[in-house]
Length: 422
Image 1 (cartoon, rainbow, N blue to C red):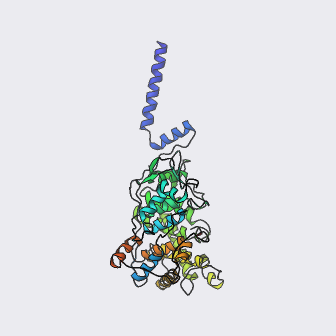
Image 2: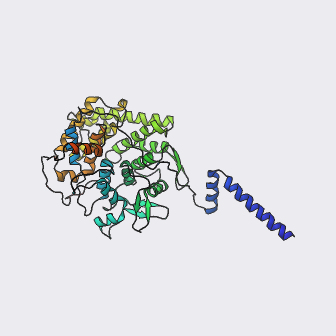
């Protein structure tokens, strides 16, 4: 009888614990699992959308960027790449500029769908790189990782590929084909990025963009180590440090901040104090680029020095000027007018970057494609459109259009020097 009573009590106790666990708040369940396993127990972040958010442009300035100028610039930045040994960095920049829907009437130019397949289908990637190259996609225990670093066959920056396909409009349920033959979706890449992100990473620009385009209205989530993350923390991380430090003279951090600011307008993902901090930071950037702009319209790589950049000019190469000018025009196109330099400054920058881009030969564009791709994106935004949308309408009206740059390089072979990372 005592033994029967003992096991009855044990059974009731276990049932009670089970019921209590099932009825407990999700945070309590997470803590219990963490205590029992000794590992952080983090539930996947719920993503309520199947398509990424699209940040729409605010202005249409045909007097600043004519149809003819925009068409010429976009002709220059078509993704006309050799398929063999194609660097993911080029493809990532091309798809975020042109989107997944881009179509061209030249078979030598990769369509948006071809760009997407290269990034998300390992078999397509292998046709370019062969079986011995480090793959771009990695089948991990918890999800799908994207390899990145200095190896030429992988992405250059952490979460850069994810941010680019998100800006390109790739859907969450888009199939991903892995080296192991296992089939997954873009959602697996997003969830893995959420798991492996660390706030103290050197570069958070593209993580902030990717999370911003998928997670709202969610504004907080937990990382793999159980730490509570938020867009507030991401914004503060982007603001921290010297303005010029960061990829492309610090301009990517500025773009990510204005993207978060625009998302906050619609989804309230930032607290009021952080929203003001972001705005004040961008206002500081506005004042610095107003003071640092050269008479011909370009911005220097040390734009963060303000007027001192003019009195003590840096010996910038052309690519450095293109980087600063193109990237600043890009974030300004999605920023409110109160964060703009005077209109004449923006017009001078546009004129300089348009003429500079048009003067490049095909090979010169290829060698610096990652930088010039931002020019195409920026100028389309200033016409309140996107490259893919404008190009589709332009070619319909001008089916035989062709822009001949002064250099007239007739083909793009193997690069004599690798394009620098963007």
